[in-house]
Image 1 (cartoon, rainbow, N blue to C red):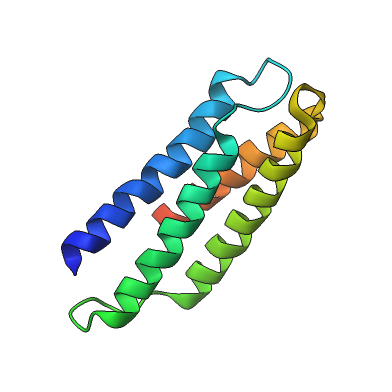
Image 2: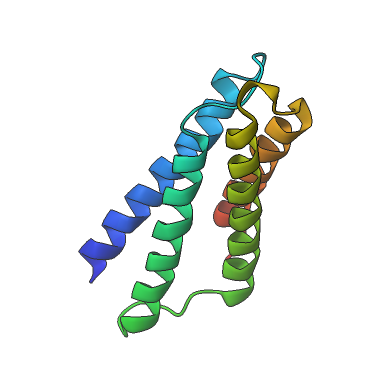
Length: 115
């Protein structure tokens, strides 16, 4: 089970790296990075899978559900914003792009600093 958890953790990190890296790479350009929606969906689905694996495996500690709820809520908002930005293409407001980047950074900070 721990190998499978590691696979989903890797995918989760790659998903958020795509979202945040795409934000940094296109910060001064109009619109959002093309892979933002896919990265956010990858992070969301892999995060849900990781929680399920931790709940099933008795050898792992139970996840902090407050942390999971915060991260899930933020991830859902990022996916929604990325979906809206993807639909608007180059006409996406700059604030939408910065909201995606900022919320992604907050989600990463919660993952690192909240235990």
